[in-house]
Length: 459
Ligand code: TEU
Image 1 (tube, rainbow, N blue to C red):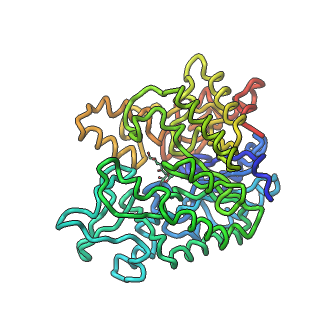
Image 2: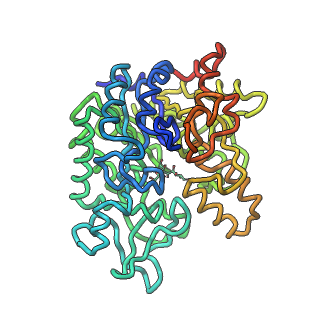
Image 3: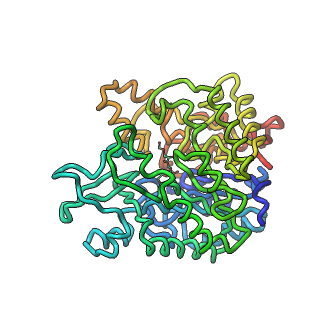
C-alpha cells in the first residue's frame, strides 16, 4: 500500500514551468532540470498536466493522441529521462488523464465525422428537438451551448467544454476498453500516479432541458459513475497497490466523494472538490465580482474534513491549480501582508487531513497576472467570457475587472525562477507574459531567504 496519506504533491503546468529550448514554451527537459529544486521542497509526487499530442486549444486538455508526447513538450526519451531522474530522487510522477473528452482532431472523432458508425458511437451524437433547436439547453463550461450541429448528419454532438473537445460516450464498452489500454500503456512506463480530469462527468443520464441551471445536474455524478470507476480501477491501476489516483470532481457532492475516495481503494485514492473555491462566486457563476465569504470557506473546509474522515475517505487539499487564480491574491494580500498571508495559507493546507498539492510558484507566493489588455490573455475560457460579458451589457472596463480576478491565466504566467530576463523561464519570447513582479518574487530570492514561504509548503 502506498503511503500517499503522508505524501505531498506538486503540480507542474509544463508549458509555464521551464523552457529548455528557447521557444518560449516550457517542456519536459525543463522539468528534469529543476528536479533538485522540487526535491528540496519535500515533494513526493509531481502531477504533470497533459503533455500528449494536442492542438493545444485548451493547453493539452484536448488530447489528439494519448500514446505520444507533443513535440512541443519533447519526446518519449525526454519523458523516460524525467521519470528516471525523478525516481532517483524518490519522486513519483502522476499523469493527467483527460477521459471525459478528446480533441476533435483525435482519429476516433475524425472517423466519426466521416460517418463511421462504430466511431460515431464513441461520442455523443443526438438529433435536435426541432429544426435548428439543439437537443438540450445546457451551457458549456467555457461559454455558449454544449451542442455543435453537424449538417451532413443533421445531428449535434455534445461538448461540455470547447467545441474542439467532443465528449466521449462512456456507456459504450469499447470506449471504456480503449481508455483502459491507455492507462496500461503508461503503467508500463512505470507511472505510479494518475489524475483523472473531470472524471465525475463521464456518466451522462437524461438529455433534458434544464430550467433551473446550466444542465450540470444531468451529467454530474451520473448514474453509472461508481460502476465505471470501479471497472477502470479493477482493469488497470487497481492491480498495482503502489499506484495512487486522484479524481477531479466538478460540482460533486460529499456523499459521492465518500465512495470516490474511500479507503477501501475500489475507486480512487482521493478527490479534488471545488466548493471551497466558489466562495467568491455567485452560486455557480464565476464571472462576477463578489467579496470572498470567509465564514462560508471555513464551514466548507470543516464539513468536508469531518465528513470525509467519518467515512474513511481522503481529500486532496489545495488552493491553487492551473484553473484557479493565485491564492495569495485571492484570499490573502499582495501588499503589506503578502508574505504573512502566503505562509498562513500554506500552513492551512498542510495542517488539513488530506494530501496537500502545491501548484508551481505557490511556494514563492506568486500573485495574479495583473494583465490589463485582452491581447495578454491566452485562455480560451477567458477570451470567450470577455466577449460574453460585453454581450450581456457590461462595459469593457468591467469585463477587464472580472478577468483580472477570475481568469485562469492568472495562474498560467511562467514560473519565476530569477530576477533576470523573463524571470529565468525562457531565453525566447514567452508564450504568455511573465509577471512583472519577478524581480521581487522568484525562486532564487526565496531560496536565499531564511524566513521563506516555501518552508511552509514541503513535507
Ligand atoms: O477543469 C475542469 C473544470 O470544470 C474547471 O476547473 C473549469 O476550468 C472551470 O470550471 C472553468 O471555470 C479541467 C481542467 O483542469 C481544465 O484545465 C480543462 O480546461 C477542463 O477540465 C477540460 O478538460
